[in-house]
Length: 582
Image (tube, rainbow, N blue to C red; front, side, top):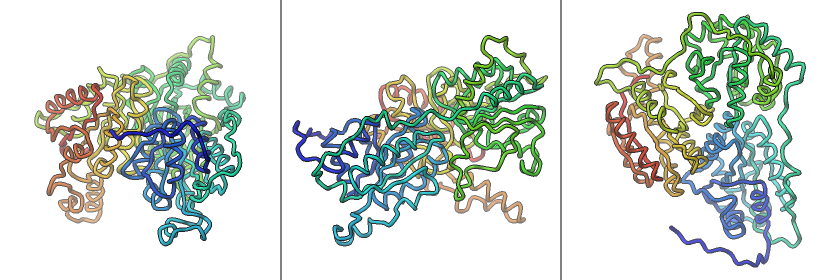
């Protein structure tokens, strides 16, 4: 380990970047992930020599994308933002994809950027000029909540306070504060205060009116078949328990989705179907067709889900069921990003934080007898039963069911699940069992998300497991070094079909549509000549690893060994060679 030399007890001269660092600490940030760069060398020094590399502690990354995705993964568990530092315009350009992903995930994040001296007279030849941009935040403004370019230490304090406030205000999202290099590196000739931050905290999230609460409760009492659709929700156990109590009080059916983190016990009798995927299957379509009341708690694509059954948009052929939709998402919709999804037809729009709405509804049912269960007739509760497969078969489903068996007996948090993970392998018993997909549909985020989640769960007694595809792994593999460097225990299983197989499916569709050879779908997709040595890449980052494993039995044995390594504080990768196909 490298030796850290603390600064002297005497504070001595103060610098612009010192008060920025002090403000970040005062706001309670535990970590700041970064790839170092000269544009924020002043802040870097302040974090190390003024704050002692503690609160926040630096998390060194090998790529700016990973710095952001680790912060994203951390907030998925902690429900609080992490800080990120990005070097100038070039570091920001590297990070744009994962910033967009965090935006789509609605994850809070304080991103500190930097630029060369705004005063052109102060710029070093060449390098400061190419690392200085006019309106640097314009690169990402369509998918952040707010940005600022403070040019004094006092303004920087205010910017960090305001940015934190906005990031933590629902609906959550990343903010970007770009620091002038000269401001950071200027000695202060005056006192610059960091005020008591409690007076700059975000306010309580908006909540539903009593009229909306009563209208929804009346509808739940009167409905023949009410369905509660739980989408985005907090990680807290109290919020989890409240959702369960609401389902039990109302006798309603519950749906959840694999798009978002686990928000309801999938084995509960009200959760009659497994978590839904990207679009309704036949069972889910029948349920929605029969329902006469749908109450959505920030379902991420309500109109898309309902319209998939109808084969038309909600504006043209809306569902006949009465719909209550609780969400604050419209507050961050803009004209650039279409992540707001299609427009749902809603009878009662409720502008409230969804878990707060659950609490208000629950209060209306307090001290009352639970309503009768109104589940569809002849609908047995789903069970986690492995698909039948030949003994020699080892595909995505067999892999999933093999891993899911371990989750029955171990406190596992699935930071991510790979393409092809079957809905019936989703047994979630706590709010930390599964943390959701990558909201932006990106590739390369899985390693970072898993590391960030594992960081937040360190010393919790839970085992963080990321199950990701080989393409996701290969684009993000050097994020693993950060986990090894920080001694963050985690297990990663790579569902390795040696292909960008999702795109093989698309090419097959194109070939069939155009009457062309389906046999050519693999060209430009396969990663098998030569096969990439995924375990060697993990070992190069400081992990241990095993593979390829090519059967369910071999995976069971490898997974057990991997769990032992992680329980002992290690970082481990398993390369699972599955057959192509979902």
